[in-house]
Length: 248
Image 1: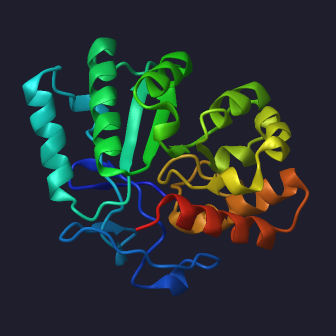
Image 2: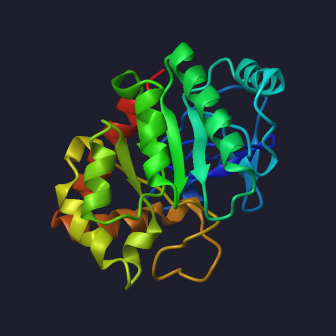
């Protein structure tokens, strides 16, 4: 089960892993990554070293050797990384010019292929270009997950056609997310993941408050309701899928 955090200036994708699991009811499991990175969240909670890293989209270097140097530096700093991400395109904020976003995205996809690592995709108002670049840079040679997926059935079908997983956030609990809930039954059980995207998008009944990794259990409840199964089924499926995607 996925959660998001910041690690050493880069976005990272660790599974829930804390020194005090008792304060996170409903969440279990520890997955270690690349020392010496650590993340602190909610006071004394410590998330173990990160699974993956990417370049923050707000400070992307221009295309060229400087870009490749930055990508190689991030890669070499995480020799036991389990993923490259989150990476992708964001046309909502457009913190960097789109041609630069494209170049960096391609470089990171090439890095993932060279290290045989899965990727964690961030795409916002950029789905057409995201899917096009994925196809051009590897197609079926790439594997990964569409992070924080909130689309409808048509969007789900396009994303699933890449062979990637879909990771569902707390948005699934929002009243206006009916199209997402309707789409969930079409997601194969072996392509489903859940996440919090904390500290954002806290699920109901915590909406409007700071999101926390522990709330992933609430996301599981809402996904289970939309798919018409018990929460334990979703927990088992997503644990299995996480292990399959982010295998050592």
